[in-house]
Length: 167
Image (cartoon, rainbow, N blue to C red; front, side, top):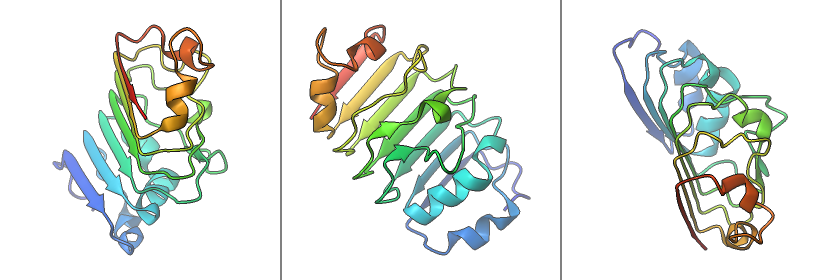
């Protein structure tokens, strides 16, 4: 797959044996990557995600059913600093977005979080300072935690011009 240098967009979903395809590596000129399924995102995070300097948009869905943080701290992965759009969806036990994983995202402008019903914590230490929009859907815990002027997560998002949070 690494020989597909002209490939700019790639979507992989529900392919349990995809890890063997990825052994050659993901094309480094990708600008958009959509992945779905626990075998896929974990394999990509462990190997290649940090080696994609052109990646602007990343969407991850149907992640590991047991993951409580993203990226998982034990993997030690960071998201590429080139990202401007990031969407994470359908992580049923996810409780936090890891500050370590988000520490280099100085270009991130749009963050979408969907169907993460146990999410309680956004990255801290001004990790979301470049965001222009934040969309959170299907995350009932975050509705309370991001409540204007009252929720413990409010201070992390108060600077974002476009915020939509629906339980």
